[in-house]
Amino acid sequence: MNSVRIRFWRRVLFLLLGMMMLSAAFADITVRDDTGAAVTLQAPAHRIVSLAPHVTELLYAAGAGSDVVGASAYSDYPAAAKSLPRIGNGAGLDIEAIVALRPDLIVGWQSGNPPWQVEKLRKLGFPVFMTEPRRLDDVADLLTRLGKLTGTQAVAAKAAGDFRRHEAQLRTRFSGRTTVSVFYQILDNSLITVNSRHIISDVIRLCGGRNVFAELPVLTPRVDMEAVLRKNPQAILASGYEPLWPEWHDRWRNWPMLSAVAHDGLFLIPADLIDRQTPRILLGAERVCAVLDRVRARLRISAKH
Image (cartoon, rainbow, N blue to C red):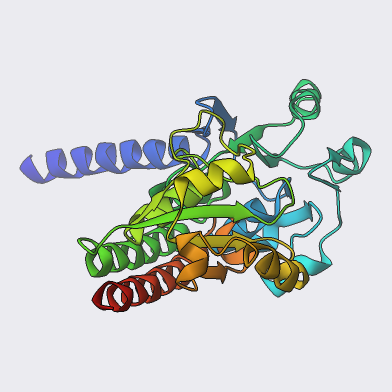
């Protein structure tokens, strides 16, 4: 009798486990994007359109690169992304091209894509996941969420873990160092910078720097030369179109009263390593940390004399 009962309950258990596995296989996938909106898929996405270069890079890092069927202009990393069909750029999206690709997931950029076009894609029935990473840890979190949407959780979890370990190593190494005041310039004659809510400001903090325009209310505000002179930063960092660097550098040399000029604290950080919210931003952070250490050394030498 006992053996009969055992066999009976074993069958029941196997049946329940099978039902649970079947239910899980067909369960919807729901993930919240960076705007707080819930994005629901009936199955992992396998035809993905990326609306920004950093999104393309994140998808590849999360293990979903082979499922990306279209990407925005300047999606050039990794190398495989260069051959993807283009569906527009920061100025606007080619809605017809996106529709023709029949995506089952569209991943966009809240600050970089025209809101009315994103809304149009939603009204056409496409699931749209918007990104807007403001802190370094947001990059790791995005990798995890994209991995869930694309069914590449294992690869995404490893990438997120590697990112967090790298960030922690930099934080441990550079925390407690003398603070360096920094003006970050997005290479432009209008002197566009970033405030404290921008991820670049988080990189500056990681390296023991202080963004002199952190308090401004706009994410990427325009400032004038008088404001920079008043702040008198000890370091000036720039990104943007690298061939313009010599011109940019010479222009700052016209202001020798600035501490950053007096102590040779003018540095170009490659845009792809600092402007894109991807795992490579920590490579940009390594460069920022290194140049701020050079500024600290020059300031110490200057103080002794």
